[in-house]
Image 1 (cartoon, rainbow, N blue to C red):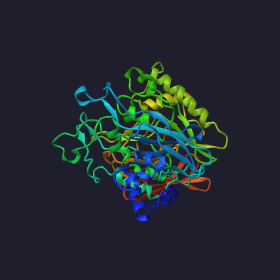
Image 2: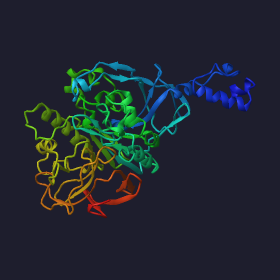
Image 3: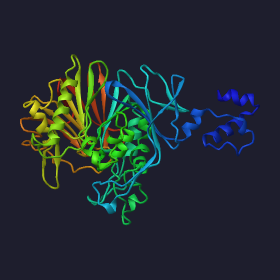
Length: 483
């Protein structure tokens, strides 16, 4: 279309290329002859798109999302048919709300871009915004990249200011680029995208100039920009982490990644609505005909066992009943994913590893006293703990992966050999564990009717491989410390 217009105006090829560059910059009037060209609307729109991605929602609905500096949403093309994306959330400045930070360390949230969206038609084969191609969902994904806890920590209350300007100290940009080179069909992020909560102090050279707070500049620096290669590589399943609860980065979470329609009362803009916005119903994403992911929002989960009269207990109990209904699908194996682990280990200070997840466990045991999970759940994948763990049980409990080593400050390594007398939850018997605090990611790759799991460093070197010899069980070629 553009070539026909240029030819009909008698513009040379060299001038055409110059004009095209000018159109990409939205500078049309400064070059002789370009004023006669009417640029394709989608091309102009694309020049103002700062980020674009595809994500999976409940019912296996795929959604295209884009952030734009224009007030009007861009045009999107599905197999050559153009339509305008729908406005999800307009650019806005949100008055400062109560956060986990002191008032002096908080500020209003400025969202300089509008967020737009469009549901993808079934069986679409090409998705574009101007010249920008978006990834197309696959009915039977063959390779899935899994990572979590990716942001750069700037947190005054922890007195931790990560060197966001140094990829050795904050490797997420490198992790995302390397993971994209694996050409995945899907990406699963297990939560905690945003860590830049307070300003970098003057005496911390490695984070000088870093965006902070909960507006679009911090989201762009901490996730949207470094994740761009991986966002372009495959559709995503986004799991909400505790850093995306309402008193933290919940506003950006609902604008960008929550898979449901945007609602002001579930935007985290007004703290009076946090009791509602901090919780979301579970949903399932098909990984082909015989496997599904069940996505659970644990953003507001604490660490202490909950009383049955606690409103949070009642809320989560109802949501685990939804998990059970989603899992009860004949002939389908279920993988449960939430940010907080149901089973896993954490190590505080100089103490040894201890079980983690009492709050979640207290709710799960009310429904399944012996197994915690519905019987159809064969595997669990989490983040939150800043290391990698692969847990296999001799008891009747699903194997668990923790992939929380994607970029934020990693936890200390567990002792080697791993203590034989610790357990992640009452009634569980740990058979084996593989663990490391090396930065990196993991993949889940189809092997006929089964899956193989591979663990990689930030540079893409394989550290370990795990197979599933039986439902609910994994076998890793390395155990204890890997790296």
